[in-house]
Figure 1 (cartoon, one colour):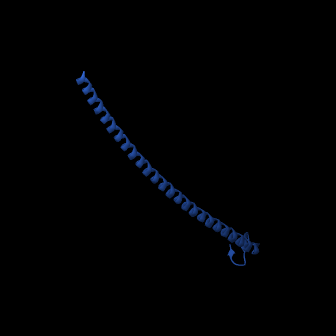
Figure 2: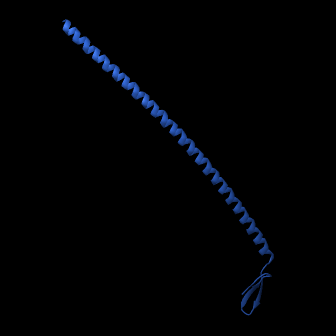
Figure 3: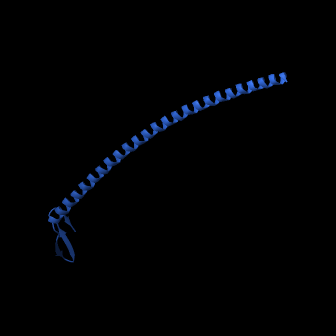
Length: 111
């Protein structure tokens, strides 16, 4: 019986040591995973910041281009209005020369 008790005590001690080793291993693994999670969260934050920065820059460029296009459109409209008013001043005066109509403008002549 004493021999059995000694064997059981040794077995219990060995199991406790193994349990402690497993607990230490699990704690170490959890610490590594916590470190990896923190590292990945930092990377995600950096990438999110860079992505938002890129989106802001792209939006600013697009707004600038849109503003430039609107200005170009307004410029073209103003030029078209000016040209139509200028052409309106030089009204075509049709006159007959034989069977053909000729239109004479003050700044150019068509046949």
